Image 1: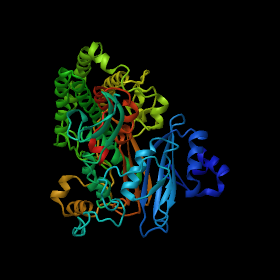
Image 2: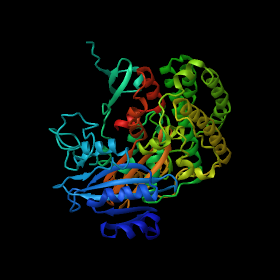
Image 3: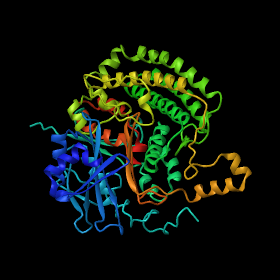
Image 4: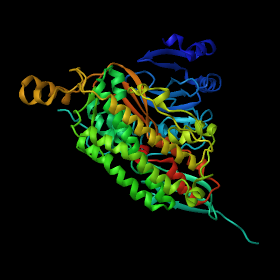
Length: 162
Length: 390
């Protein structure tokens, strides 16, 4: 169960005020935390709980579905303990930035560039925040829900299903 | 007074040894690399965005186009993620055939790797040999799915169809001869002085740095980290198979080469174990909500036709929630992270491409070496731009 997860126990002990939600679904534990303590929590997980591999870092756009539009997702993996943990932190559209995790894992460098490119979330303190997949002069962020699938200046997408 | 200055050189995106449309901007001091800046995105097709507008079934063919040298590994990762999300049990025969195909895919991908890697470093013969063996795997692909590369063979809940009768013999014959071919490649390379000079001490990355930068797959194991998802976080029934996980010691290109060669031999052994396990039975789960009806029903009964039409047009709803499924693809950890809002399409589908994360290490592995060694580093990272750019 999620309550007995080794990371959840420690996090509740140390960062009780920052933990917003703990969910378990299909055996995967997701902890939603406050944005302002994200780096502290990630560093703690890496240093003290051996989550040494940052498997993935991405974002989700909940336009019109949640009050806080974006959700940052960090997928951690512990090689010594052979387990995974997902950490999430909400980012609002108005204050569309979050501290960089590239100070904790170097992996985050390119992954954050991709999130910046496709979602438009800015990472404070990132060493090299440039677009990575789209061209430098591209306007807009393609993975945002309000970005048309067909691209700008085209007929809106009507869907494949009749 | 004489001054020295560095030179900036553009390499790619059209360059034979960048394995696709990778562009590197090099800063050089003579022939020594001071800085490498990769530019990617030339093959960006927006597969993640497209996936948000397609039903779970319609996304499957898109996954073939990620790592086009290992299509079945991508299919496997995706369907396992969807199966985890909606909770489908897969029949044993389907699971076994999936393992056979996943391991043949690993062989296929590694064959292309050894072929191109050797060609880049100047050993032409291996290229020709390895592509000959790869052809057999392609024939097996064609036999079961009708396509040589864009297989689209696995289905949520099992397989699209059972394998033909000649499948077992063809696979069995292939893995009988494959270890001999591997000896042949090793005979051409492992003790070849030019090969040794070009690979030993090239692209060194320590175990600690490799984990920090997120390397996975053979690149990580080459640095001595004993980590293989098939064994450590098993999926798709890999826990029922015995295999060794090779690790390197010297963290260089030669060790990564040896790791991949052992992996190919182990893949043959896993396929053999799977063939021994293969028993007749259904290949698709008995789950009418998710799985297509058999073709006889579709052609001969109105109910079957409606059933087929309903899944093809509307798809099926997945429960609200989010799952991540990582698989040990030939190039590293391939992950699919699906967020569902309860509808018939994913709210968000994220693909964690192994090559994208591995390519990040290129700067660390090549600074201070010569341009020609950079070519060896690109080869040893075994990248595919199809999944880097998605």
